[in-house]
View (cartoon, helix red, strand yellow):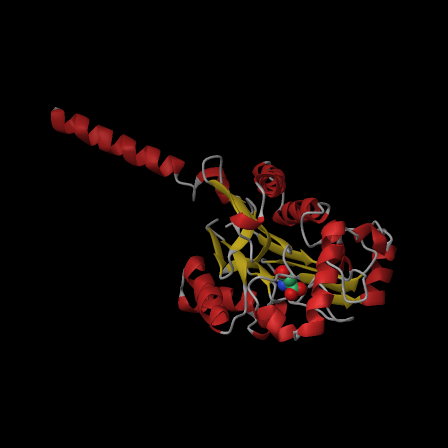
Length: 337
Ligand code: ASP
């Protein structure tokens, strides 16, 4: 009798355990976002600033999660999360984009879906309010994958996306960073400036990776690039494979950091290739690439990763990365350092 009760209790615990397992709850929908990696330290952020960043990350994450939990598609969740971050002056994308050397803003963005591995990307756009929406339009409405400059702008106009004057992207904080960078460049080389952990001229790129109830992974990234960048410079964010990647059979990745290194190491695709061909977990694969290979050559930055079971991983080799994820009401997180 006692044994039977014990057995029944054991079965109940097992059942409850499975019922609350995040991998099976909410048919696996999940969202993970970032707002850039870099030399972000508690000492450099006031409690009010920290609260503002966390609030905005939480808003983007929660609205995207709600959309997914209501049966929405991962592509719409990624666009929603990134648009919220692009519209905030806190991040180096859309409204808060950094200045190039000439004192203007050139924006890059990309998006990829993991079912058929369709992708869209734009580089060097100056008047598109939400470059991530243009990347989506390139993916869904053009026969191309990557448009740049004037052609991308003309396509945005054709697709009736919201256009703004380049001055819309002006913010005081980013302007000060440009002045600081220009001053530093009089005394030091680009390379030295990049290696100086006390200076950070590229922080705040945004990205999102989502998994919907249909099992599709979508990843997207949007950025203003790097402060004082040379006219025409394109970073990793709009480069499919480097800054953004999605494959339902392995994972989805959005990257942030020193773009030149991320392009050379094809970071986002390499992480998913390790998952696919070596059977690594997303955390192991991301750490190998970001904390070992990139760290070894001083390629600073980080990634967010999501797999088809809804597992989430962050990996960064910088001091901090603005980040958040949600898999269900009890499994969620917002962090900076
Ligand atoms: N990866 C971006 C670029 O190099 C910058 C960043 O993520 O902070 O353009």
